[in-house]
Each structure stands twice: as structure tokens, then as C-alpha cells.
Length: 373
Image (cartoon, rainbow, N blue to C red; front, side, top):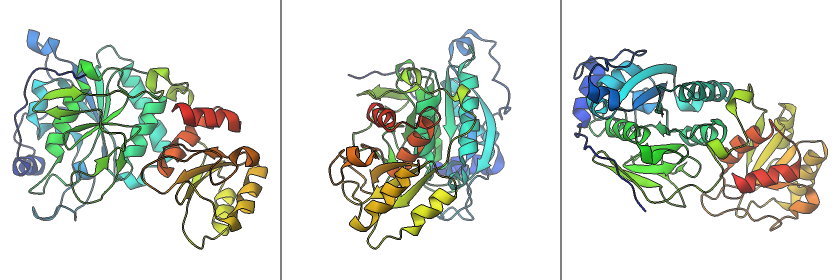
């Protein structure tokens, strides 16, 4: 199955994008708070898309055009990002808001909640048809999954970033942003859940992971992309079957903070004291990013059993990028009252655990949630 939307977008070379970001020229600047004039019938028919900017590499700048990996993130404001890609105005009536101006490794749970509430507010408006979130790539997959869990709307939500700053010769941000607006304005994207649109692919926000830190083809899902954007047309080939957005039992409007969830990374010769530090910091759950099938070393089993006996949730995930953790394999999860993360990587297991713990700390319910989401 595929779907497409009409209207091809013009290509924009990285050098032009860099010049536009540096100078603010190349298009009529758009106010960060106002939609473009919609006096014509054509403008009135176009979807309305809001770009929420949070910083990241897509808003980054390097000292030289040859710097694709050395740069300062979160330098370019949203109005210049939009002005640098004038083709977005052929697709939708676009406006922007600067929510944060940070590198994504600095995202906190409080900022996740703040961003989620703003996305929810916007999508409740009749004059907003879709939202694009520009984001740094380091934690982009976590934010995308969080929005997928908590925003109660079928309208398109697209999270987008870039692997190279706009000042680089081979900048990927311009086309990524154009594609993101294309998906956010697409009727075919309605109900598809939060998507990540980068490197021509439409990825599922739940499934996608950052797999490399240098090249533009950094984001990958073991279950495959949802589709592609090619020359201004969207092509969907599969849909997300896990619960998300309107089918989710979670609602950002009812969440004001997230409980602390820690991650302990599995390796040889692990230190039990790391788990104690997480509990002392106030963690309500610990994700054990185990080796292989979420394995727990024999010398740590009693430590994790003790953690559970003190009321904290133990979740077995895996440091292995693909596959999924089998319940009651490697460890007797039923006996120890532990939860398995299924196919979610440790970072995403942390997000789901934090959201789920706003409703329940019953391990049977938590395991159901991990199966369903």
C-alpha cells in the first residue's frame, strides 16, 4: 500500500542553505509568531503547519564549510530556519515558535513535558493541521517516542533533525525540514503516529534509533521505515500497530512531571554500587541494559532482587541494537517480579517506564504496557 501527495518541491543546495542561515536572506522572513498572509484562495486551501524549534544540529553552525562534524549546536533561530527553506511555503502555511535553543543531550524530563504540552495545545486548534519539531539528534528518538505516547491527537507530528550543520557543504537540514513539513501537511500521515523524517525516509518515532554519529543516514529501525518522501511526495508502505496517540491510555494534559527512571549499562565486571546510586537519587525504576537477551550476571541477581523488594521496578532491556528481550528467558522474571522491555532499547524503555509509572506501579500492568506500546 502506498499513498502520495501532489506537488513537487524544488531542491535547495546545502551551500544556499548555509548562506541563507548566515544572512537571513534567500526568502521573505517569516515572523516566529504569525502565519503567512492567507488572502488568496490558494493560501486558504493549504494546510497550516507549526514548526516548534528546540535547537540541535539542524540549527547549528560550524566555523568552516568543510566542518560537518565540528560545530556549535542550537545557534540559528526558527525564523531563519524557515526563511532558509522558502519551498515550505508552497506546501503549507508555516509559522514557527522557539520553544528551546539547546543541544538535545541537555534535554530534561521537565522539558519533555513542556514540549509535549505545547504540541498538545497546538493540535487542539482548528487552524493547526500538523506540527514539526526540530530537534538535536542525540535524544531525538526519545522525544519522538514520548510524544507518540502522550499527545492525544491523530494530526501529524513530525520530529526532524540533521546530522550536519547548515553551514556545511553537505548540509542535510534543508531537505529534511522540507520533507518534514511535507509529511506534517500530508493527509496520508494522519493517524500514523509520530514520525521522524530524515534522509528521505519516514521513520516510526517508536521504532527508530540513532545508529551512527557521523553520516546523514544515521537513523534506522529494525522493522523498517514507514515510507519515504521523494520530490515533495509522501509514500507510506506500512503502519504502526502498537498503541499510540489517540489509542494511548496516557495524556500529556494529565502529566505535570515524570518519575525518575535510571539506566545501568551491562558489561563485564559490573559494579553493584551503581544500582545503589540510582536508588539514592530517587529512581522509581531501573532499566538494566543487559548483554544479549537482557542478561543479568549471576553476581547481580541478588542486587536486583533486593531493589525490587524495596519497591523499585526492575526492567530487563538489552544493549544489543536489534531483536527483543524474551520474558522468563535468561532469568525467571515471573518469580522475581521483573518486567521485560520487549523490543525497546534502554533509552526508550526508560521513556515508557516513566510515562507508565504516572499511572501504575503494578508489575503486571507495566508488563502489559510494554507489550502494547
